[in-house]
Image (tube, rainbow, N blue to C red; front, side):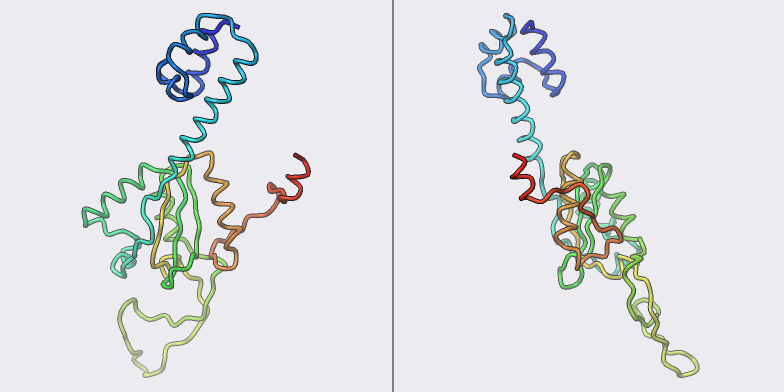
Length: 223
């Protein structure tokens, strides 16, 4: 195989603009890349170089996983607007812009900062989070007195308000949230891992099954 064809194919697959950028990515000199480009390459060279590029690319994607915000408090005023951000404040508007540009994982917490909901999206975090925040939690029913929000209002007949079971919205319970930027190919894995680690604490209707997961012992035996 011609080295020039091999180098060009690598750069196209991994979206690397120049030979020098490819050299820097895998720890080769530019001279070595030029040497490979100018000769027919062996299978051994193809395997070695492809492995180095794949490892470097994976490392870049893993290192790109970053927290956007952690344990951000949701005020009662924000809840009354059915939002978890006050967009009249410049800092929170900036946070919304970040969430609109990022995909990844998000977590909502209750007043004791316990995880109650885990979600993910490969599109815009903001759109997914605001949708989840206003979603009825179908498996979260609690006895409740339906008072007018944030004020006391006795009934005209002097009777107490009735206690009844009610399905809650996430905004009724969430007090804090975190959001993390994660490469799209890892999002499903991390969401599944978190949900399986926290099933007793979550309001998520869907709990991850084990159909796509193998026990560690089985994986070791197969290797």
